[in-house]
Image 1 (cartoon, rainbow, N blue to C red):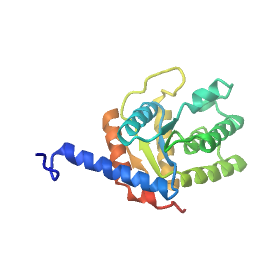
Image 2: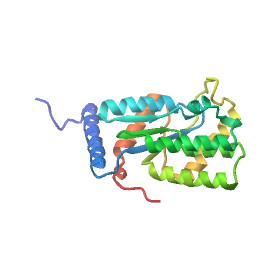
Image 3: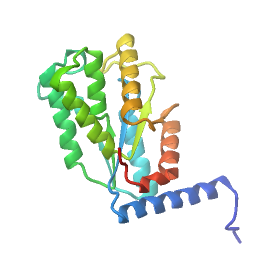
Image 4: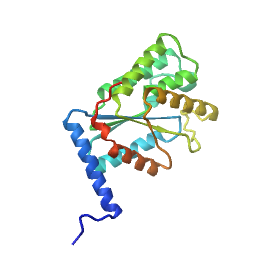
Length: 222
């Protein structure tokens, strides 16, 4: 007969998943739903792949409906919006508008945003397009969005960037963007969580953070 108090790692993992599912279900019942989470990082650090893996894992293990909001830049490029170092005021406004639209329309039990308006702000700073009403608007929107996110994850540059014809591969620009993102996270969401390692390690870290965070049940007030 199986011992229910077994300390076997598999048994503990099962109990941890049950505890996490209970937390999320309770959050749903008391109205802190959906859970909106953000992920930021410099180009090429593996955000999109990680978001896809997290979505698949959470849907499979916790039986939740997961929506991953991704590929904002690729969507806007098709509409003629300039990206990366070529962006100007109209382009930043297009990015902010698209992020606003996704915040309003994306649905699910858990919504994972692959980049947020904070990333737009980081590009503005690196490109030297700060000051005036555009920056004032961006500041207000970043404050609004980060206040609506329950957790925020940051991915540092750890591996070589693969050139896909769209993302930035210049190491100096990547370094500057990473620094800008970190500085903005410290200002707007200081309790962000860093995910490191290969994709599987990052998914494990994400799940541990999601399941252990009892503050998921506490409204964020800034």
